[in-house]
Image (cartoon, rainbow, N blue to C red; front, side, top):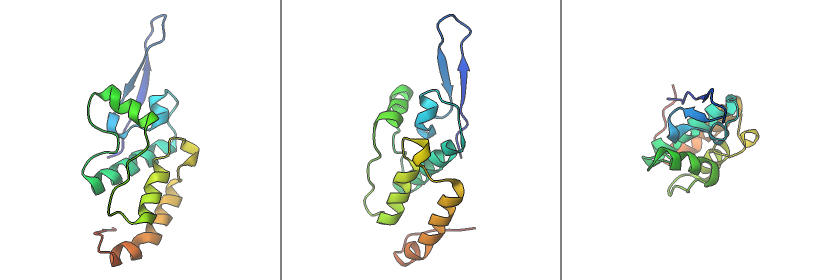
Length: 128
């Protein structure tokens, strides 16, 4: 469930930009009008992982404009009971700056490294 985002420019003299996508999963750079790159998928995936762990998205709730603003301005609230290594991975993938996020291969490797720890802590993890 990764977001699909596209910016549409209005043909009017004053340049109005609309964001198309699901506000809960949009990376800050999309909200700011930058072109999407691979890092937006890492951000969206981390948002989904956060939602799976917490039961809600990190910046969701309220008016869509408020949700979009929170993606750009607020930091993610820590989740109690999450192993520190997994939390740090989430924080890195939810970084505001795209260059600070892990690449997909790095994320996959780090998640694989954590599997034994997560299994011994009783965290339900399914890998297919």
